[in-house]
Image (tube, rainbow, N blue to C red):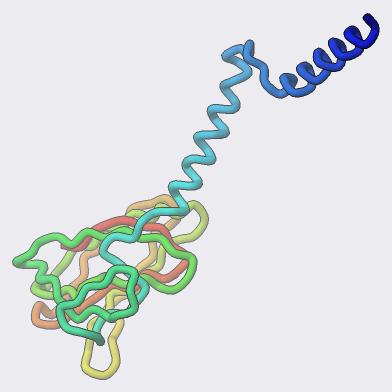
Length: 177
């Protein structure tokens, strides 16, 4: 009988050790901090894995005409005419190279750029550049503080081509119209 008692006590002890980490009778007060921690972790993951929309890490202007390759190595030369095609939306996030709009923007002599800085640590810095034959010229440099929105009115030549360059690190969304 002592062998059975020894085996039975070992089984009870093993069950207690294995089952010790699983408390099925946890109260609501015990679960609340775990839910908060999960949501904080979930927010961080979403923040770090944002998909780039309307921007990529290749400066526009050279490459195969009319080829848009998001996240690719070809430099797009296609244009987006703001007066006929309307508003151009964009969003992106990177800690590496600068991000650029996928299209050269044209067709308006004055544009409104609205940008939200979604980064939790760094201000958003971006430049509006005119695509010229040899060197690209910066038309304006702008900055949006952490967690803030910015609206900028920029004067352009409606027959020239422009793009926006977003300096890293960044996490942003917005549009130009």
